[in-house]
Length: 382
Image (tube, rainbow, N blue to C red; front, top):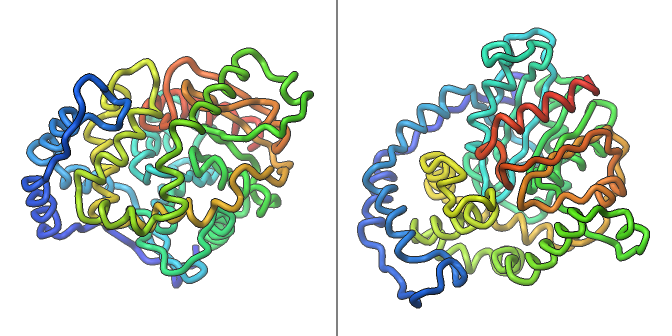
């Protein structure tokens, strides 16, 4: 590790910032709502009032700040941008380095429950041969990486930054894993650094069909259903993406000024993207972890800069990805849109798993399934 370029870091939110958050929660001005529409017009006021009250009176940021600080954290500057990351080394000397990438509206908080099993499988009833050294960056513009200071931080530039980060840490061979934006960045990283990336594992893969009849004919009945769900999502569920990809700064005034606005903006996606078998987001994801994730956005005031990821990347939406020959594994959870013929078009797929529980945030929802699949895939590429 190149110590001169990397500095230790601890999360230390000033008490004044927590007091200010509570003051704003106490003085929320609530919108009206129509009766009987449930979640179809957005987050119900009655639901959000209860969640905001819990955030104000029961949730304890300091508890989770301490839990995050149990993991070694660092910062470094890459390509002019501050990069914050967790770096947790395994006690197993032959562990494989693994870089984990979150997406929006996620953060490093997503991975808190998988770090232990990945780095020390023996302590969790696993095989020590499956151990990883894990590197978990906050994406540029997100959380403790702070706001981006210039345009151009699209996913390809992030992938290049990750390659440099792993070089600075001294890793000559490593794997990559990610969901949401991480499911795009991780394969890009494999394409950028194929001599060192031994394998790429993703969940929440999103690929678009070309319209080739042969591609459609290769899809299973379940995959055709996922394609239909994807088309419905493009019609009814992409308003957030259109706003973030066109006017992130205008949106940011509300998200930077109102914690309840920030809460609603993120929690809606936890409702829509978690395991569809559950009615409420906290049925699928621990409520305190969900609020810790929201708190990271609020306390670092990075909602606007995180939204800019969409603005920076919009030009590539729907464009075919450059094919990567790095060995790749895919995990498909309920509600996501993994379609194998599309994945195989763009990737060297050697592993494919489909699960009956979980959703878009498997590290939070079903960490046992995600860890198991990551272990299984990387056994074949170590």
